[in-house]
Image 1 (tube, rainbow, N blue to C red):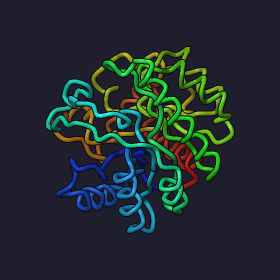
Image 2 (cartoon, helix red, strand yellow; image 1 turned 90 degrees about the vertical axis):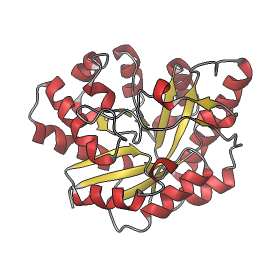
Image 3 (cartoon, rainbow, N blue to C red; image 1 turned 180 degrees about the horizontal axis):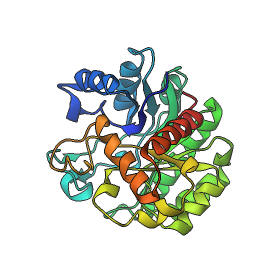
Image 4 (cartoon, rainbow, N blue to C red; image 1 turned 45 degrees about the horizontal axis):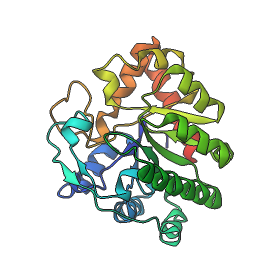
Length: 278
């Protein structure tokens, strides 16, 4: 089957969807949109796999430890992610457990390792925090190489260090996606040189900061995501985001690149199937 679109990065496995996760997934599949459920800790990663294995196709998992979960940290969603209706929370610190993550990484419905990476936003740039994040990121790149699955990378205020680690750990041999790309065209070219894709969220529907990169990046290097429940696109601002809204992001990419929507949709799906082998 060839879906209309694939949301490559959504968190329906998070507590924001605790009451209606299965309903959201069913509604999304009926709308001809597939999805990758992305974990940020061991519990949400396991939940992603648990959801994915219930569906013969259309629902997949990424498993990994997000850099903000290495230390206890207060996270203001409305401020940091420009999202209404999702409460703030305090992160629960976790140490990366290679064996626990490898077990779920080997599951046939797991298509990527992540989201993992570096996040130096709002005080997460002390030497102690940076070293812990970098060490954990390297461990997850190594796991991805071990299980031969691509990376789903989170990067905030840390592009140079992420690029350095990807080069040193030979991540170009497995590739993957730079989730929620927000860097310059110069940074984008460095990721493309490493055979990574760039994915974009609903932010592009209400901010012009991404237009230059989107105009320049080849369409066959682009993927699309919601990052639900965060960064809800126009015209759904003020609501909790969900995977079906990925269509608004894809339409905006077509508009910015001045290409027919059907051509863009087909290429976005093809890119995703190639990257994640689904």
